[in-house]
Amino acid sequence: MTDAWNTAPVVARSTHGSDNYRFTVSSLDHPAVATLRLQAAALNKGLKEENVRRRQHAALEKAAWSYTRRFKVEVYGRLGKDSPHAALYSSRRGVNKYYSPKRIRPEHSVRFDVYLREACDWIAS
Image (cartoon, rainbow, N blue to C red; front, side):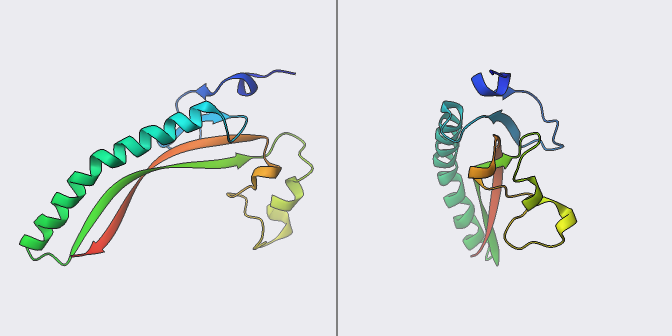
């Protein structure tokens, strides 16, 4: 059985309510995920100089805090329809510290949503 998400990434605007959503893939080693990670690394390399200038400016202004920007790729697993592991992530079971509905383990996942997030780290100057 071949579905669209088995053969290629589904590149579409977010239906998840997040502007950070990029696409859905069928495996973690999909080439599109590797490409996005390389692009994030290139963006971070370009931002490194900007972050250094921001810290230097904060030191000159005697500011107490400064921040650095960076991008990171996050991959979240999704359960398939009629998954035998769905009971582990069900909210009907109450609070479960081992299985979070937002963090589905890769071995339980059928598909993976890929997000590109911008992270800002606050540091003392």
